Structures are given as structure tokens and as C-alpha cells.
Image (cartoon, rainbow, N blue to C red):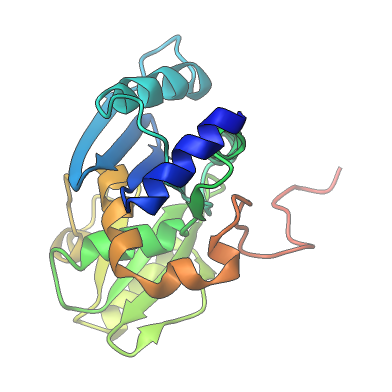
Amino acid sequence: MDLLVEIQAFYEKINIMTILSLSLQQNECFVAIEADGKTVAYSLQIQPGETQGMVLVPFIQKAWQETGHAPITVLIAPKGPGSFTSLRVVLAAAQGLSLAFPKAKVFAPTHFDVLNYVAKMYTDKPCIVLIDSKKGDFYGQVFSKTGAETPLEYTMDQVKELLEGNHELKVISDFEPPLDNLFEERWIAFDKNIAACQIELYKTSSLKEALEYQQFHPYYLHLPNYVKRKPI
């Protein structure tokens, strides 16, 4: 471990950054790594019988091999909101890597931040980012030129009402669009590698300076009392 820290310190001294970015979205795994200014990005569909935990770590190793196993100087993983299992797996992997590379800087954006960054590649219109809660409603955050609104919970009817009240508002999400003309007209379909987008977000955003973005802790919409469970 001491040798690894010394190697990391040497890389920092000569200003060489190696950025590793991880993400899990639905049944797809994303890994990207940038070294010497070049980014390699991979995505992998998780097959029946496989778990996210089984797939992610070997996938990280494959990408890291592309750099000649250069010491990681920046670690990126999204903190949510989203699927409990996906967050648990990706944040656990990131926390483990931060132990292996103790001098690496940490960047933990929300899924809202990442998908809003992707949306800006396609439109300059205001956008609502929707994350499926898997409980029949959605977590949403509206972004516009004036800034980001407070994240809220939305039912499908509330999302429709929002879109009907703002004809410029676009939608980007981690799920497939509903079969509805209103959504079809406003939906931002994207084919970007999420992990690679997280690297670009890190390089261009001031969010990384905020303390809450420097810890691999899960992000929940309502803390500490909000839990989506029915009374027993």
C-alpha cells in the first residue's frame, strides 16, 4: 500500500491524471477511464443469471488494463437517487477503490446532475430529469438557465401537468418513455456512455468543490425520516 501511495504521489507531481468512472443503470453497467487525456469507455448488458456485483469489478479491471494499471487519481460514482441494489453495488465498489487509492479525489454526483449534463448535449431548453422510484412514482428535478429547482416526488399525472404548463420543458430519464404523445414529443433519447459523461461533468463542473460531492454516500430524497414502506 505504501508503494502504491508513493506511485500515486509521483503521478500527481508530474500532473498525470487517471480518472475512473463507474455507473449502473437498470441492467446496464458503464465503466470509463481517462488516462493521458484519452478516454476509453465500455458498456455491458447484464445477462440473466448475472448480478451487478458479479459484472462490475471484472469490468473495472478490463478498463484499467487499458491504462497499464496507472494509479487512479480521481474516482467517480453517482450517489443516487435510484435503485437500492445498483447504488449499493456501485458505491461499495467505489468505496473499496478509494481504500486502494487513498490519495484519489472523489466525485459523487447525483443521477440528476449526470442526466442533466447529458440533456445539455441535445437541447438548450429547460429539462426535468426523472428517476424511476420503482414504487409507482418518480423522483424529479427541473433544470433551467436560472438554475436547478429542489428535487421532488412526482406521480405520472403531475409530470404531465408540468409538461402541459411549460411547453418548452424536455424530459430525460433512466427508463423508457411512456406510450403517450406528450412524452414522445418532449423525450430526450440518448446513446451516451454514462460513465464517460461523468468524467466530462467532473472536468467542467464546480460541483466537485462541494463537500457533499466528495463522499461516496447514497443520496436520498428525504432524510432521515422518509422510507417508502407500508406499515406492517
